[in-house]
Image (cartoon, rainbow, N blue to C red):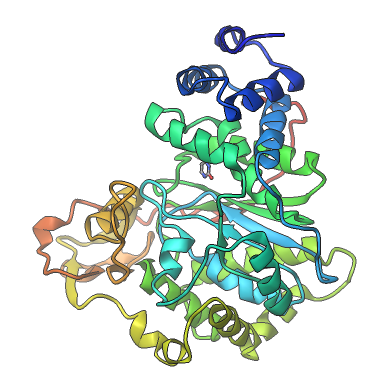
Length: 439
Ligand code: URA
C-alpha cells in the first residue's frame, strides 16, 4: 500500500496513480490520516505535472462520494443544469432556471458565490430581500417538485472533499490546474443527479482562462469526465473579452435577467448566449421529441410564462408579495452616478474585463476577503461595446456607486484604435476531438 509521501513523490515524477491509490489517499484525508500539508504538496505536484483523465475521473468520484447526492426522485421530468466557469456580467443562470422549468425540465442548480474578480449567482440573488438559497436536499426536492427549479447553493452535505480541497487550493496557489478545476466543478454538479449538463466555458480578459486554447483544454476535460459518468453533455465556449450584457453588479444583473424574462429588449450578446445555452439544455432534456425548441423557448418568454415561473420560484424561496411588487425599485442601481467619457475618438478595440471585475469589488459589489459583506447596489452600465465607434467626449460607461466617486478612482480599462477590430464568433460549440486528452 502506497503512503501519502509515495503518492506525492510519484506525482512529482509525473507518474499516474491508480483509482484505488487515489481513493485510499482521499479517504485518508477525509479521516484525518493525511495532513493538509501533504495534500498541499500533492496539489502543487498536480499543478506542475497535470492529472491523467483517469485520475481526474477518480478524484471526481471521490468528491461526489464525500457528500450526499440529490435523491433520484425526478417528478417524471428530465433533469438538466448548466455551469459557467464565470466572468463579469455573467447572468444567464437567472433566466435559464425558470425558462427551462417552464419548458418541462427539472433544474436543480447548486450555484456559487463570487470567486476572484468574477461575480456569483448566489451573491446576485441576495439582492432580493428574504430570498433563501441554502437548503438540504430534502427541502430542495420539495421546491423542485412544486416549481421545477430552485435557486440553491451547496450545503454542508454536498461534495465535502471539494470544500476542503478548494480552501487549501485557494491559499496555496494551486487553483489553476485543468484536472483540479474539472473535478471540483463536476464533483458538485454531478451530485445533482443529472441527465444532462451544459457547460459554458469562458475565455478572454474577464475569464479565468485567458486564451481560447486554455479554455478548450478545460472544455475537453469537462466533456470527457462528465460523459464518463453517463451524463449527456454539451460544452459551449463563449467570449469574455467584454462583459456579458449591458450591466455588471449584483441587483442590476438580476434586473437585466428579469427584463429578458419579461420579454423586454436586452443587449444582443447576453440574449444570444442565454438562448444558445437554453437550446443546448433543451436538446439534452428532450433529445428525441422533434420539437421546435427555439420557437418554444421564445414563446415561453413572450407569453409571460417564464417570468411567472421566476416569481413563483422566488416566492417559494422567501421573497414576500411586497418584494415581488417592488422588484424594479429594489433592484435599481446605487444613487451616485459617474459617467466615464472618452478622451479621444476611435473604435473600441479592447476592454480590460478583469479590471472591470476588480472595479466592482472596489465598489463593494464583491469580496476582497471571505468575510467581506456584499453591497448589492453598485453596478456598471456599458454604453459602448467592442467594435463600436466612439467620439471624443462620448460616454463609454456609467458607474453607479453607494459613495461619490471621481474619474481618478477608475483605472484605464478601454483601448481605442483607428480601425474597427476583427470581431470573431462569440459562441463556439466544442468539437470533442482528442479521445486521449491530457492537460
Ligand atoms: N469553480 C469551482 O467550483 N472549482 C474550481 O476549481 C474552479 C472554479
